[in-house]
Image (cartoon, rainbow, N blue to C red; front, side, top):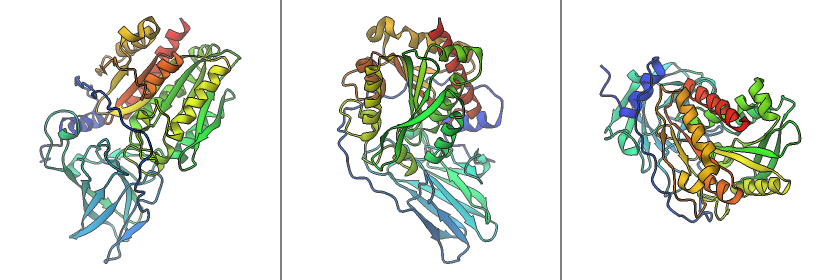
Length: 422
C-alpha cells in the first residue's frame, strides 16, 4: 500500500499526470508583497562539477551537465545513498533545484534520500534516459519523510524523500523539473528561426559572459509590439513551457497569427538568466541576485540588457502594447496590476484573463492584482511605469500537467491576438 502520499499538491500532480481527471479548484492565494532588497552583487558558491564514485566501483553519480545540481552524495551501505542539495547563496527563495545522473556497471535498484539546505522537498522527481523526455517517478517508489502540513507552500511538502530507482550502464537523469539549459533553449530558438519572419540577435551578455538573446518575430514596418520574457528564476520550467507554446502560436501559420504579425511585432527573451539556469541555481544569477528584484536599480547585466533594448526600441518609434513575464509557483496564478491603478490602459489584461478562463473552465486559475508599482523592482511594474505597457506576471504551477501547459499557452496567445486585432 502506498504510504499516505506526500502532500495535497503532490497527490494532485500524480492524479493529473496519470489520469484524465479534471484538475480541482485550489484557491491558491499567491505570494505576499515582495520585500525591497539590495541588488548589489553578492558572493555565490559555484558548485563542484564532476563524477562521484565509491569503493565498490560499480555506482556513479554526476552533476557535470547544463543545469546539473548535486552538492554531495554519501554511500550509506546496502545500496542506499544520501544526496545533499544546497543553494548558490542565502537568503534565498525555497526552490531546491536538483539534477543529476546515476549509473552502474551492473543493473541494480538503489534508494536515494534527498536532503536540502534550509528547505523541504518541493519538486517531485522526474526521470529520463536521454535528458529530453521526462516522466514522473512512479509513486510506488516515493517515500515521504516528515510530511508537511497545509495545502500550499514549502511547509506543505515533505522534509525529506526517499526514492527507489533502477539503474544500469545507461545514465539515468533524476531532476526537479525537465531540463532546458541554454543549449536546448538555443535549439528551440534556432528551430523557430527557420521561419523567414523570425530572427534572433544578441542584446547583451550575462555576468558569466553568456549571450543574452532576443527573438524577433516581425513582418512589415509597423511600430507596435508585444514584449515577452521568461526564466528569470532557473527552476521555473513550467512557465517556460507555457511561454514556448504561447510564442509558437503567435509565430504560427493560422490566419489569426498572420493577421497579428501584419499589425504587431513580437520580441522575446526566452532565457533571462542563462548563468543561473546552466549552473543549476535555485533562484539567483551569478551575481547572487534575484533578477526580478532588479528592475529599479539595474545592478545586474541581464536586466540592464533588456532595459537598454526597450529604450532603444522606443527611440526607434515603437509602442509596446502588452508585456508578459512567465514564471512558475505552487499553482497557476495571474499577477496583474490592479485596475484602480492601470485603468482603461489595463482593460486588455483583465479581458485577456477572463477570455482564457472561459475557454479553460476545467482548471481554476487564481488572480492576485497588485497595487504596489513603485519602486518598480519587478519586471511587470517596470514595463508599465517606464514604458506605459500593460503587463502581467503569468505564473504556472510546478505540477500543472504538461499537456495543459501547452494548451494554456496556445489559448493565451489566441485570446491575445483577438483582443489586439479588435
